[in-house]
Length: 354
Image (cartoon, rainbow, N blue to C red):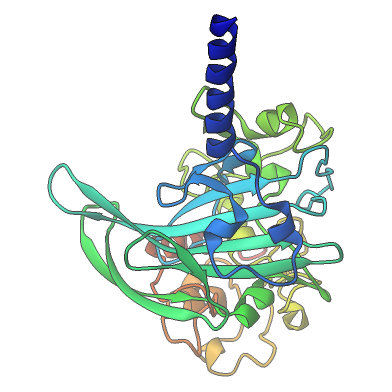
């Protein structure tokens, strides 16, 4: 009898320990209109500072990503139990109420030959409320122990070590709430940008296995059925891929959310979303619409064979806030992307049509 009682107590202690360590995500906080001040309130992570997600919060990555001043990004998705996201052709998944898309921005600094320090800057949330998506930003404290709600944006001066090993400084800008809405606008609604099936169709190194992300999401019942012939976008850094596919993938994720028929830059008539195929809408020999200084005195958005005469490239190589594109989300010129778009335009035939 004592042995059974001891065994029961041991089981109870283990159960409590497991329950405490892997307690559920705070669904009420996701749906609440009283936005939590602290990121930890949502319960997305077992270890907040280490960004170790709880069971049911799944890390993911994108094939081609949005440039944010060379910041590193950790992405996670949470869909409530017994709910699923639905496939939508040429769009992000239709996520159910209670979904959270989580993205933490950070920089890594090499301290010495063997040590690298990771500095968490901000964590952005896209929360699926009952009738809308809500954008919220949480800025990390200096102690790197907690992130706090920041509606008005913030400038963070910091350093990082780039891919070549060079130490660089950056004046990183945490967006304010209106800037978040500008990028995520689709008509009168706010929508996610990144998690489209074609931009998720790649392998991911999970703790227990390496597996295609769409397969993993399906196994975890995050998504329902999806076509098995999804055509993934190109990784813009993959030199083995066709340059047109690489350039279009980069422009789609970095520009196409605004430059689309329902985006905040729809009035320009310059559409860079992935599905656009019309020559003029892609900027080829298209005159600017009220670009002002942003035109640089040039006549067309894209001049086939002549990148130096193309407004698109002119705005990419600028760091002047009145000229540069994208107009928010960066303060540094993305040199690798500039090189790609330069080569893409230079290789275009003068009589090219799409």
